[in-house]
Amino acid sequence: MAAKPDNSTVVPASPHFFGDQIRRRDILTSMRDGSRPDLFAGFSGRPQLRGSTELGGTEYEDGWGALCYQQKPDTKDNDLSFRSWSCAEGLACQVVTRPPERGCAFVRDR
Image: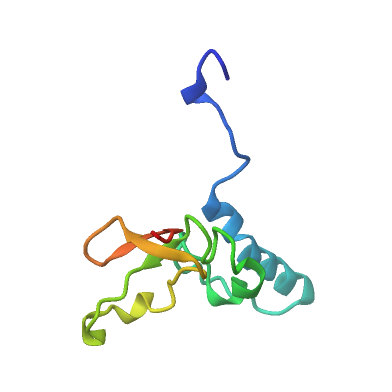
């Protein structure tokens, strides 16, 4: 790592990979049990609701660094697809793309 720090692996996998493990586990469980698996993948950057209890409060769901959507003051201007993309308590969505106003959850300014 010292010789070529920009060409090294620091983490074992991406947040997208970790966030998708619940879906992958459910597919394997369905196949094991002989039922039809749900192959729907959804957004790779934000796991589906089926993982929210296991991933809630982590960077994969609504924790620090998670993808979020900054709600506009007038609700008719909001994209309903991203309504649930919020931030955990104490964090705020800081916009990184326009439009739509997607961002990352960071520590709220004091």
